[in-house]
Length: 187
Length: 187
DNA sequence: AACGTAGCGGACCGTCGGTCCGTTTAGCAA
DNA sequence: TTGCTAAACGGACCGACGGTCCGCTACGTT
Image (cartoon, rainbow over all chains, first blue to last red; front, side, top):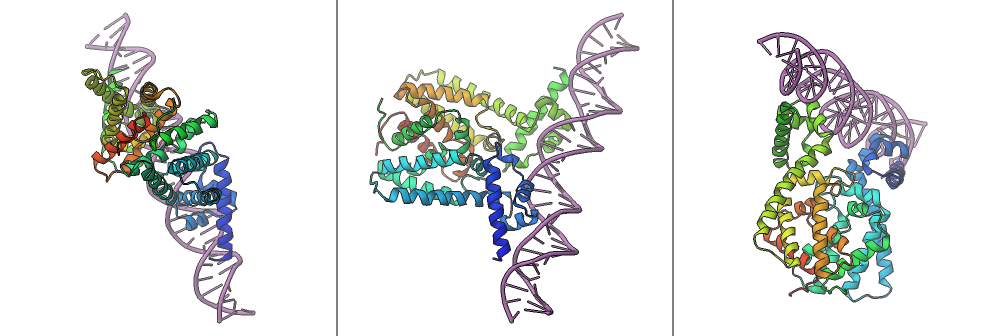
């Protein structure tokens, strides 16, 4: 890839990131906006990313990979052998990610055409969670249960619950995880 | 409301229903399409329903109410006092509804602006499920857990799992419900 | 230095949601 | 039945947006 092309790619990604981060409604971020903010022609945008979905996916996966790297790094230290604790930590990381990347996540999930699922990151998290659930409570329905857990941190739900204190949301997710993994409610 | 207005309202609703039902991608159903299929001018459409979101919501709530009526009727016969069974039945009805109204549900859920939640039907189901969960396992996190259950039958997830046999999906949902309500896995 | 090509950018296009306003007609009253 | 009025109609019209096209630019190579 030519040097100017690489430079433009980075500029677009950074501009789009800022735009989405400061947007209330991700649909309000147009491709023209991104091009203008990046100081780049519209043609460049579309040649590099194909279409709007491509841009959003690229940006989303960039941040997802960054997050995943931090996550692996943090959990590598103290071997958590208990699968339930591992799911709790994973879901907590995912929840924080959705909160911190509200608009971008919403943009990704509202692209149309199975958008939240046709995405490298989703397969990654789903595989991990499904394996841990199978370990914790057996393989029966583990696949679907993993989908259900991930659905509980869908960005528009998190957004809908935006006025809840973070602790309440976090507690809810943890309760859900423990229940699904086979622990009984403590109450 | 004038007679012709009422007639047109029905024509639009029916035409839109057919269009969504036979569409793969709900985004492919344009307001012009609906107007043409209903034999009505575009202005009439927008005067009656405000905007696209209004039309989709009206149609969705029409079908939701029909379904809710059937559901109440069916469950009224044999008093199910067990809250867990009640949640299982409710979620099963919801799952079937999402399968049978695939495109319309996807249209509703992808309107933008917290679309799946700013909707009379959602509040109804959430309230019912949350109350039953509270009854089954205590009030702790019941509110969030109800949201989580409903998220597990989001139409795009159901769509993503379209190639699963219905029984597998149904079993997964039931497993989820029982786990969340405090039952231990049988495996 | 010169050259071929990958890359650039913005004018341009089709479509879509939504508006506007001149025309029609339902419903009522005399 | 006739006339009147306000509600309703419908489709031409508009602005915005995603996506394309093509003449121009400049990077990297020889």
